[in-house]
Image 1 (cartoon, one colour):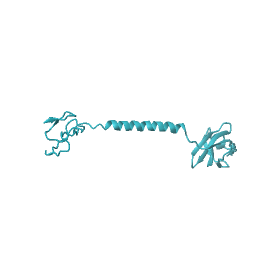
Image 2: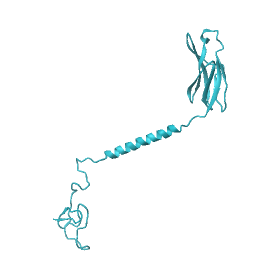
Image 3: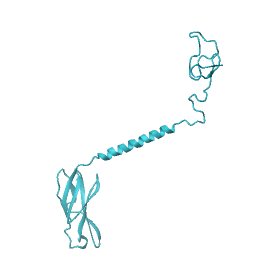
Image 4: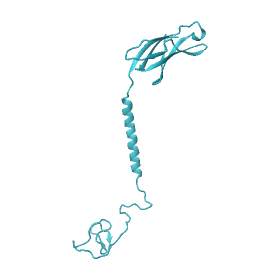
Amino acid sequence: MSNCPVCGRDVPAGTQYCPSCGTNLQQTYGSPTTAAPSYSFPQSGTGMPEPNQHHGHGKYIIAIAVALIIGLVIGGVIGFSFPVAAHLTPVNGIANLNSQQTTPFHGTPNLVWFNSTTFGNLTSTVISHKFLVNLPIGDTYYVSIQWFNTTGTYRCIPTTSTFTSNNQNESPIFSC
C-alpha cells in the first residue's frame, strides 16, 4: 500500500486514481494499466454524511424564513406608507326632524347614515343639525337619520332618501 502524493491517504497498490481526491497515481503517462480495477466505498470525512449524521438543512430553512419575514415587513411598510385612497367629496349638509310634535320624532339628530353597496355604512355625527362627511365619489347612498330621546334611539328615512356623490362640494338637506 502506498500514499497519495496530494492528500496523503493510503491507496491500494495498482490503483490508477486516488479514491479520496482523484489524483492520477500512474507514474508513466499514456501506458495502459494492467491492474484490476479497485472499487472503494466512501470513507468517513469525504464529504458524504454518515447515516446518523445531521444533514444541515436547518440553517437554510431558517435563512429562508428570515428572508420571508424581512420581505413581509418591508412590503408592509411600503404598502402602508403609500395607501391608495378613494377620491372623496366633502358633503356638508343639514339634518332635520320636521315632525317634532309626535313622541318618536321628539329629539335632535345625532347621526346621518350613508349606506352603499360598495362602501357599506358610513356615518357622520350631527351637531346642531349640521353634519360634514367625506364620501367616495360616484356611488349612490341610501340615507337615514338617527336620533335619540328619553324613550329610545330612532331612525327615519328622509324625504330625499338617496344621494349620489359627485366631484364637487355637496350641501344636501335631509328631513324626516
